[in-house]
Image 1 (cartoon, rainbow, N blue to C red):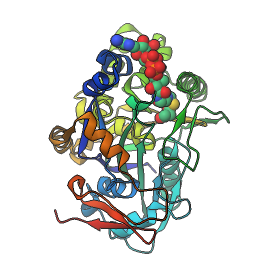
Image 2 (image 1 turned 90 degrees about the vertical axis):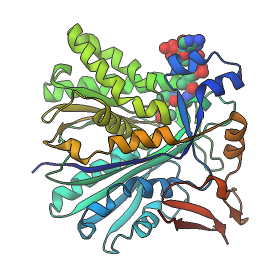
Image 3 (image 1 turned 120 degrees about the horizontal axis):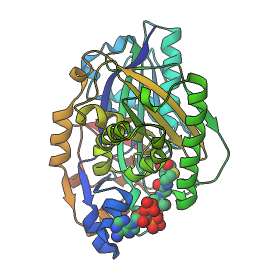
Image 4 (image 1 turned 180 degrees about the vertical axis):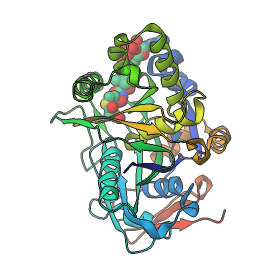
Length: 390
Ligand code: CAA
């Protein structure tokens, strides 16, 4: 039985900062951000958006088109959850109006949480072929104003419906994964700002890719020639490229060019949204499918997932006949083009206006509400969510 991605949705906040503006404000050559890091714009999440609202907004792209009575599992993969105990998945279940006969929970392992959710969902559908699973990968990447990681922030979510006989892409049973306890990036519970050893994290990402890719080749006998494209976890768009460069010399120059072209298409959305941690690999998949005119049914795609701390996994998928009918390319492009550009001063104000780490009540600024689902505030330490009229 083939199992995989039957529907794909994405969401990112309505606000962004242009990285040329940010470079100027920080006294940096804009080419460092645009070429050196490979980012042009960065989504800015107002305090009315969190992983619950963004995840629900991503799933809203297809939820009305699916049979929700078949959904037996809802997993939220995130490393920026909104509660240390309760999962965001159960709130998303309510917001989306899903039946109560469903298992809901949250998975955390840095940027690997989305893949952990996907693989768990795959196993669930293998055991219950008549059921489907909703996997949501959502995060807000925050390193702090003026920090080394500021240029690699971002916010957004990807939602995937996993089913038997999927409409978009099968997930092959060929995963190679690896775990190693390292401190390259983490976030202590007292803060919403991530800590990262920038250069070390970059080296570790590349090392994990090299190790799982070598083992994948040994175990499957496949080479890069067998892939139409490889999608990478993208903390910034140059990052995947640095890892890819280590493997590309294995194939002819023509094949390298084709793979690099596909790589560029897989980074179109990330370049404009930034790092969305757990969802970033899957944002790359959406970007590839919606922007690359060359990938077609039957193509094998590689997927490299990396979650600091660290877990790496390489697996493949096969595109299905008619997959393009289930994408939202025009709507996504129009949405990204219609976002509101914030000045650096405004971005800093929005960044600092956040739900406090305290028992105080809080109201989100109504001028920054966007998306179908929003967080209006916190009352008596309970987060208040609302569905807005369309
Ligand atoms: N024109 C063109 N390029 C320029 C330039 C200019 N004027 N100025 C500098 N550059 C280039 C540099 O040569 C460099 O290129 P290479 O990496 O190819 O050598 C690039 O711009 C970046 O320059 P620096 O190395 O000096 O950048 P930095 O010290 O500011 O650090 C960073 C960059 C490490 C990514 C930092 O932003 C950071 O710490 N980010 C957060 C951590 C992170 O994203 N790590 C990635 C792996 S961890 C992971 O995958 C999990 C996750 O999602 C976080």
